[in-house]
Length: 268
Image (cartoon, rainbow, N blue to C red; front, side, top):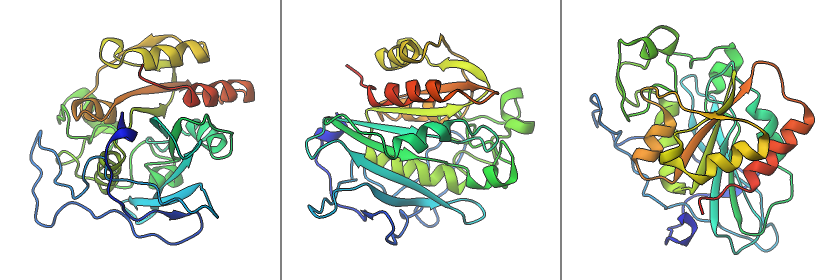
């Protein structure tokens, strides 16, 4: 598990204090088709800097959007002795925002003692402000990741434009470095509007099936090029899957079911 690996300290502070973002890709590195971005993040390098007087939550700066808006993550732990790391990401497409209802509640809900929880409300703050699926440069951030990246096909053009090259966008680069440093066990990404768990069950296994059962959803899988989940699985960063809300906002009871399902996520 991610939390059993040795970790070197990086900048982490209590919420409300300033923090420098992760370093970006190495200067002068090139990114060709199918190539991963060169990063300075070392897998599993994130650690907690616990202060007995302030045991969390902690906020870090993951990076910035194309227009300079901050991308932030909040870390909460159920105790000082955790055994599983879960990441919940509320928004990657700026016009699909129901996941924020879940991430908002995860900020304050009591946690199981064994849980190391990372909450990323949005990967695409520009898209949210502009009401766009894409980022401010017109690029679908869930087609821009360097796993099975392609261009010029139906699912990598138009509103799904995958960008000029793999991981061309600052949002993608920042999240790649962040996720490498966390090395999570399970990551869930929220989308709309298909009202299901989008999961390659043979590849992901128990986590997405348990989640589907907990929220009363069905599972299906629609492979797409350049997705965050595919990059994470290809990179060996735990298991990763998508929950698709319907277009209409979920009820408060449904949101609670999702929150509880996140808290229960595990791989075994």
